[in-house]
Image (tube, rainbow, N blue to C red):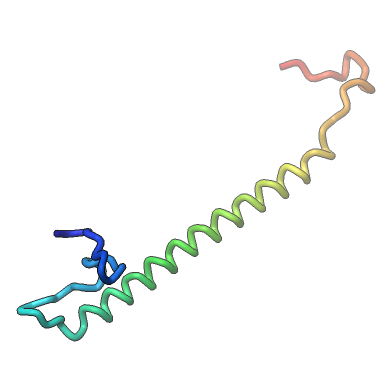
Length: 83
């Protein structure tokens, strides 16, 4: 059955069993599975780092524009901008 947990070995039975024919595993199937998992993990790490950079840039942008807000209490009535 696909995706069942093999209780005796505590391993997922389908993850590295690609290419099984007549009880023997193809030579490259295990290596291909490892390469795919490494590439997938690298992509997930890149996406996570990209998100952290975007969060950092957003925080820096907000902090840099907090000091530039005009103080409307000190402006005269004719200087106020009406929207």
